[in-house]
Length: 398
Image 1 (cartoon, one colour):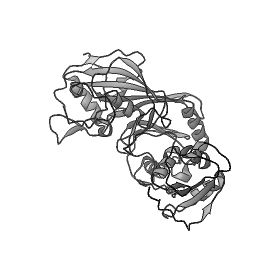
Image 2: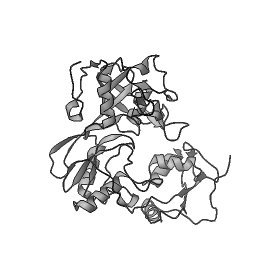
Image 3: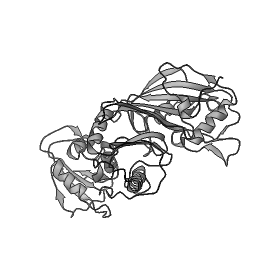
Image 4: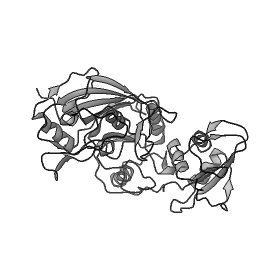
C-alpha cells in the first residue's frame, strides 16, 4: 500500500470543532497549502473513520471527507485507510484539509429568468448547464455569480450571509448542473434559516418532470431503493445495500406514453453499471413522468429511474440517449430532460403559502410536442399534480 504524500514536517494541531473551523475558513483559497490536523483517540470508539471525521470536522460533508480519505489525504497510524476503517483507542488520525473555495463572489452577466422576488427571497427558473454555487474547480459562471450581477444592477438587495464563508451565500437547496427549473435563494439570514428548516423537515413540496426511455408501469409507483456513491465511478451514485447507503424514495406518476416515436432517433445508450438490462424495445418508446421526492439525495431521480430501466433522455451519465429529429448533428435534447417544475412553500417572513411553476425549456417542450405527433397515450396517474399548460405543453386529446 502506497504512503500518502503528507508533509511530515507540517505543523499539526488538534483543535476543537469551533477552533478548527476558524483555522479552515481563514485559509487563503489561492494558497494550496492545506491545514494538517491530528486527532488521537482517547478511548476505543469502534467507529468508522469517515463517521469519526464527520464528528470532528462537522463543517465538511461526509462525502467530502470520504473523498479526502480516498485521495490519500488522511492516514491512521501512518497508513492509508479506507472510509470504513474502524478506529480504536490510541489511533492517531492525521488529515489534510484543503483550503475552502474563495468566498469572494464575483458578479457575472448571466441572464436569469426571475419568477418572483421580494425583500426576503428570490425564485428563479434555472437554465441548463448552470452550476448553483462556486466550488473548488468552478469559481465563476454559477447561479450565485449571476445573482450577484442581478443585485448589483437592480439594487434590489443581496443574498443572505449564511454560507458566505464557503462561497454559498443564500443557497437553501440545489439542482444538478443540467437540471432546469424552480430554485429559491434567500436574501436575508432570517429567511435563510427558516427556509432551511422547512426543507429539512420536508415541508417544502417539489415536483419534477422528466422525459424517459421506455414505457413506465404502473401509472403510479414508489421507488424505494437506498443510494450511495458508485463503487467505481467517482462522479456517479448507485443503488447500494451497505452501510454507506441512505434511504431514498421517489414517487413516479406517468402522465403520457409514446409508443411510436419514429421521428426521433436515439443514439446507443451507455447504460448504468449494475442496472437491470432494459427490455429489447425499451428505447423505442418513451414516457413523460412526474416525480415527487420523499427524500432528497444527490442524483436520486436519475439513479432511481435508470435502475428501473427508464433512464432520463439525454442523461448519458446514467444510460440516457441524445434525441435527434433524424439529423444526428441537430439533437433535440443533448442533456438530461429533467425539470424542477413546481416548488411550493410557506413564505419565511410573511407566512403565506406560495407556489411557483417554471415553464419547460424549449428543447424538452419541442421533444414532447414531436412525440405527440406520432400518437400517444394519456395516463390518469393517481396523485399527479402538475399543470402541463403552465409548463407550456398543455394536454391535448390523444
